[in-house]
Length: 227
Length: 225
Image 1 (cartoon, one colour):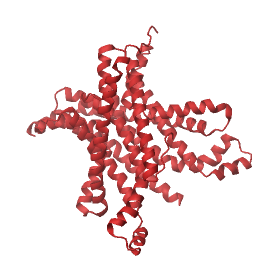
Image 2 (tube, chains in turn orange, purple):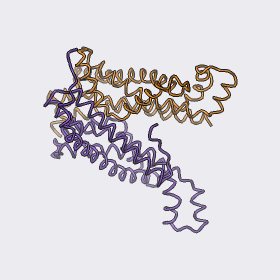
Image 3 (spheres, helix red, strand yellow):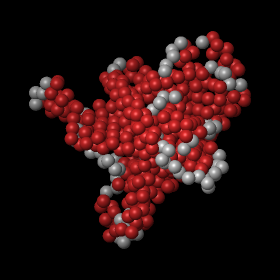
């Protein structure tokens, strides 16, 4: 305990704090970019799965395979797999990009499911009504389905975003300079692990807690809107 | 590209990997059930307990749900020896996962408590049900129907989460894959097979849970979403 107290002034130096804040930025950036791409591709997947055209059947099966597979592989294994596949093809992307690709893949699979269940929460009558008014598929989605579905989609999608802030900690394993990796470096420098991992835990908490609160607030707001 | 995939070198390691998968499942099942038990206690405290305990549980839950499991286990594994508690990697991971699961599962179970309506209990009382009958015929079926899908979902997530035990040197599925990787350097082959085993064990789990849910709790779970 005394050792920890002694270390505090030498731990919270200007450079260490800058170092940790930068790492925090990387964590946030990785999650944010991954989820934005995941959301975009997720919408595409969900739209593809709801089509009824017979010629698009192979595409739908492909989408089902994609979502089922990437929701059943641990993030760590996905990371390592993509890391080594890139090595085979000798693509020299930075580890940050590799982690970003893996986050995108997994986020696409999960958010695609969230969006699809959001679309399915809209009554069948709405689809029928849109068809009766001769709306095209895209028009139906844009004018009828999504304005109603986003209320169901947004809270869990936001929840997933918060979940991934924490899951990107695994990206430290391939050497992405994010918060957990920064913690490991500081720990290797000889600072007390209680201090180092304690502050890393607190920094994650600072990152995730306000967003969590905001998500719950949003959920409540939307729920009261709906009734 | 100059690299050919050679799976034949890996085949002999598949039984070794599958034994690793069993260890993964052990960690997942153990931490899930202990976590569920702890979560049940927490959920009971939050619904019926005194204010102070309720506050403490809220703090516990917000802390554990807002920080990464990996860093929590890092903390257990590296920081506890400072105060003289040495945990083996397996127990560090198990305790970390259990504490984390308790936080999430208490939230899920609390939602189940809320789902039992007072009117139903009143109706049961009017029919002169004993407490035991009330629990058996009114409360449990109700709670399980609401809780079963999210609980089984969380179990799948936890099975995937066990892969982070590899980072601490536990010889479960991912850990063994890393071992073979440093032996043979057939990385893509090994990790693709590892991924396949993960897909199989989670599929099997979903399948079994769906059957159990359908026949015992009238909870509808789709195997393919």
